[in-house]
Figure (tube, rainbow, N blue to C red):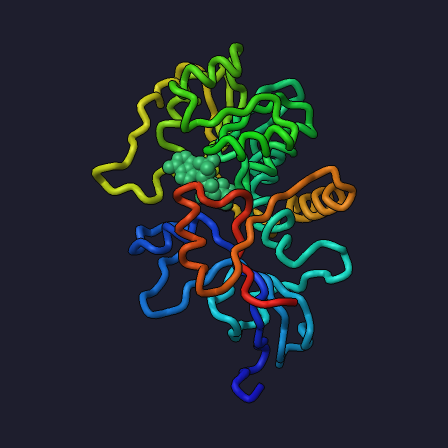
Length: 313
Ligand SMILES: NC(=O)c1ccc[n+]([C@@H]2O[C@H](COP(=O)([O-])OP(=O)(O)OC[C@H]3O[C@@H](n4cnc5c(N)ncnc54)[C@H](OP(=O)(O)O)[C@@H]3O)[C@@H](O)[C@H]2O)c1
């Protein structure tokens, strides 16, 4: 308590989040939207924890809190401005404030519900469909009457995405030609492509886009480990002009202060409590395992939203 300055809290970490954007922060700054990690300083990410001491009037000992600047440590000090309280009486587990009610799920909500002008009856293709963002896009799209095609990197993941209600799901690693597989799944073409992976998959999707289609450029996880020698240069961008495709790029942190955040929390927490939405967490135990837990994302070794459990509630 003595080491706390005014308006600070001492937090004990319960769960840390592993997210693909951290890979970009492991590179030297390229002027991107989040600062690079500083060698010798702790990594930070989204997390959930318990307040153990506070000099803030907003937080008390025992409060459950979340934020995007949790240090990868068992205990750390943050400013009161870096955390928000998590309601502890909702029946939703703390880890799910990184999952179904966390940043990736909100990303799915903004990208699909708020940005891409979906209509019932349209066809949407979702890559990395079993992941933290993808599993939520699949369910939101089904609930709004779209035909959903998912892609995932193992047969187990394919079965899981089918279980979420997707109409057609394929294993993109074993399907053969990506372009032909998408065409077979959507003979009339794709209205919306929710792009989590970029690279070759984006080219295959572009080949199958309908006139006036839309692409939600959520992320390009297939390229985050690429070097100048291995980076995949998209070949089919001329289809954007030819088929009048709109590409929506967005950065989720820009949307927390918009009304869509409350709409997300209200809709998704209600649907989750009713059992209308499922959400798969993939929990690794132990802070010492956090670095590998993060690296696993780029080899598809996570199955669902990857979190690291650091301590018990
Ligand atoms: N725009 C934003 O503000 C924002 C916010 C959050 C996330 N994102 C982006 O959303 C995307 C999904 O993030 P997430 O948190 O949901 O991750 P995730 O899907 O839970 O985990 C990453 C998954 O990507 C797939 N993958 C890994 N390497 C791949 C490769 N070379 N080619 C194709 N797929 C590969 C793997 O699934 P398979 O086994 O199925 O291959 C892996 O499980 C990422 O691109 C991320 O950067 C963007």
